Image 1 (tube, one colour):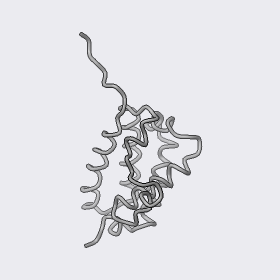
Image 2 (cartoon, helix red, strand yellow):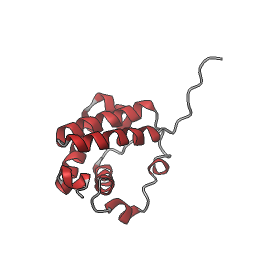
Image 3 (cartoon, helix red, strand yellow):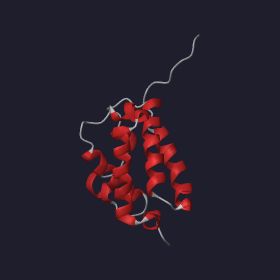
Length: 131
């Protein structure tokens, strides 16, 4: 059985995606809130996303071999992630994915899961409406 990693083009495809993702994060106004959570250099973040997605898509388990279980929400609790940060991240993901991945079936499987994962990262208290 072919993995999504293999179907989209393996290491080169994931690398192209992560490069484009972080280029967009650095340039899209819609990503400003998410970008502000990162250090000035995105090199380390790009590498970690590359390692994570490689394994998540069915390639070599680079991230888990290096860092252990992802526990993504826990790893991000030190930064405030709300709707603006999530939407900025998703804008970058959607655009980079659309530009670098042309397998419609893989996209149909991956994108909804990524959206759920991004929403799961929300860690700010919920706003309470007027009493």
